[in-house]
Length: 377
Ligand SMILES: *Cc1c(COP(=O)(O)O)cnc(C)c1O
Image (cartoon, rainbow, N blue to C red; front, side):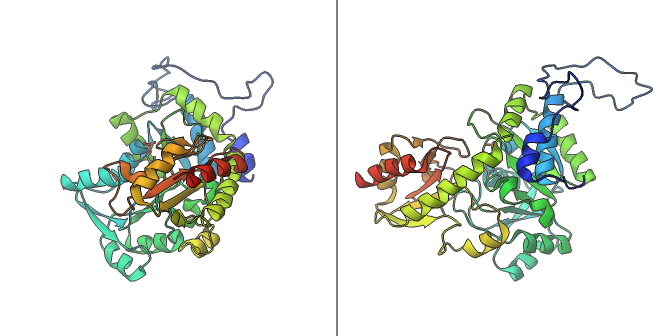
């Protein structure tokens, strides 16, 4: 599709609405149906009359997300359903190039499961080494990128990697959950498919589980759509409506959450109880330079390592009052957790690492709560 003429703040509010004609509702209706009255088959052979194939409430969300990312969106039942559909684009036994550092553990676990069944071969590589990436891409079907990565917030050069993949004939997929389309638009940097956990920032209120893909390639869109229909990981219309309602305020939420995060990262870096703060806004962060060149927002996740190790990390999570001790990320409320409490998390993530998902509360309240908890470790 053509690039949308409006800026993202305006797109988020205006896209995916019914035509503005007299008496039309302002919002797309919530359509609760499993089936649709049949149309004239001779006139419309592509008759899509069933709730696993299509739903108007999905379409409204897909139009809005597609406009923000600059492609055609597809809504799925979860981020993992979108990841699974995208991995189905790798032909049987094909090679998938992945970053050797940690990325979302569910994605890594699914890839490992596929590899265990000989469905694909994983080729881990250091994304900062172009020669190694070029070698790994030789004959590969797909390159998987997550930047900034979850939970280490490592940043890679999306445009440079996508260019290497393209010249090797491999597809580039970017999981854009952490930066959101307001932080980066990977399709404009050469990516073929963008994947989202809509559960996180896009919906933004920790009240639903959904996922999405976005692509500009018609053939890829059709394959992803076909996968969704046959594997059946479709969204509930009600969740789709809530997600679109959340998406309307994505720019406002991100603006506040990212400014809170940058402020808190600076303050956390002064605390002796914390041995390392990871946030791309910090001048000494390894990803700072690349993030500054590539991202429009430094993001609302911070990862900290407690000098006192996992025990101190658990105590911190148990001591805060405003910050909720919880998994997941991207809601209006600030949450945090020690990632290694999950057995599935990569062993490359330090035991004492706590990931903070910064919300939209007042930054001084967030800091006072953290400061009090750190004082009482
Ligand atoms: C949460 C998450 C997913 C998985 O999404 P679900 O909606 O939980 O299925 C994928 N990638 C990243 C980066 C995530 O944070």
